[in-house]
Length: 345
Ligand code: KG4
Ligand code: ZN
Image (cartoon, rainbow, N blue to C red):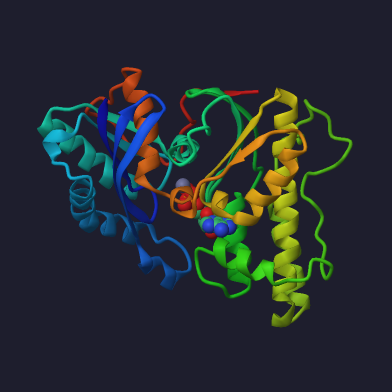
């Protein structure tokens, strides 16, 4: 059994978590997430403010994660830390802290790719959310459709050509004067809208697309965002719930259809959702309804584990630790980096 501390500082959450376990049998001993509210004032994340807040928060957040787990530093076997992708200044705080801690305690450190963390998050709550499965990762910075044969073996099927799904939610929220991050606000507003009032084209979704076509799995949300912008300009605030509904319906239907294409092509019986947008209940319900038609199960994380957190980093880190991977002391932070084990279809 391994006891591993996870650290996540890639964006605007300072988070630490302790897990214990082996293989796919893992217990979450603690999870502390400190969200940096300061960015709300600016309607988006201000990188330097994020770095500075991580710097003041990291020690108390880690201490709290240890005390919640009733553990001390000396109980830890390993440390996992997000080292890419994200805001470099923010990542460096977690990476430097993790390396220093690993060095003084003389225990191994493992670097984790943030999006691989999102892939593991759902397994913390659903023991069956393990490979093989089709994965849809939808966050503020990425939209990835993957076929996952085993942990560490990821086939990239599709991605966004422009905006990420969460980014589209955030931009639509901004157009309607809703707070950042906009996803949950747009979801709530859309639920009150009339689906028949507006209709936007489903982006990159045509019936005659074939497997092998470049746009068979890819998505694009910038046109949808422009359609929302035009509707907002041409209407009044009374139309916002209906516009939000039309946006939500178009985005969800697109993600569901693209994901189900992958489920059917690869004959998978499980769908795993990850990333902040995976906390969207409407998306999960629509995916479930569609997947049940082919007998596939859908696993979605709770909102707490869907958005950025260190438990998912510890969970992915445990996998790499068990494979014998160790980060060198010159482990660095990167704004972008491919997911380890990712191959293009
Ligand atoms: O994974 P995450 O916490 O951070 C990144 O790695 O980017 O995702 C944050 C994104 C934001 O764009 C936020 O608006 C979106 O996830 N989000 C949602 C919901 N909750 C968070 N989008 C749609 N519906 C939600 N309920
Ligand atoms: Zn994330």
